[in-house]
Length: 215
Image 1 (tube, one colour):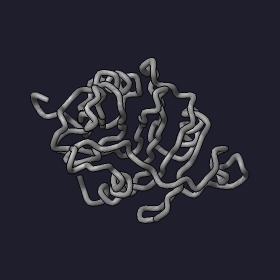
Image 2 (image 1 turned 90 degrees about the vertical axis):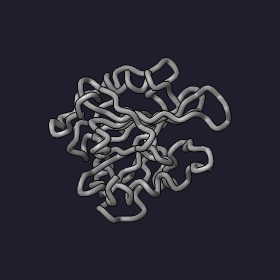
Image 3 (image 1 turned 45 degrees about the vertical axis):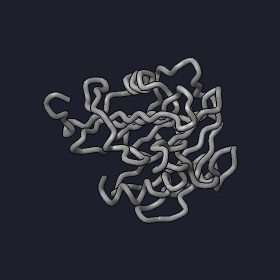
């Protein structure tokens, strides 16, 4: 991953628990909230213009929304990329739960990480703008997959506590040669569910990313 991406993701992966020892990241932590649960007070609805953080701006805000729908509406108004939710989710995944959004700028591209909970309390989330694989050796252990005809990278790690659940990350369009995508999904979900969720999202307009033969 390029240096610019590392500068963005390091704060997100800094709190991974015993990553090198177990090889499995804990749920991606986000900064401490800087706004209340009622949503960011600086959005247009409050009569002001929201300030999107710059390339090297510290203390990026953590925004809170009552549901994923509100978060997506906010991001759609502030990002050029197509922002959409999966139209299919597993039975234990809900979109009408409290949602946290971490926004930042990566190499000139406005990006965001949306974080939700499952009914069991496990975390899952979506990345928009620029996406990458986090955790110890995430790219090295990734395998190539296809998402709606486009190349992607899927990383699966086991739970160090010995349970059957898997920590899954998927980014696309992305290849081993170009391991940065536009969309990303992560969470304690099954690999097949994550791929199905990804395929229920709009196809990314990124024709420059082409899978190598055999991927």
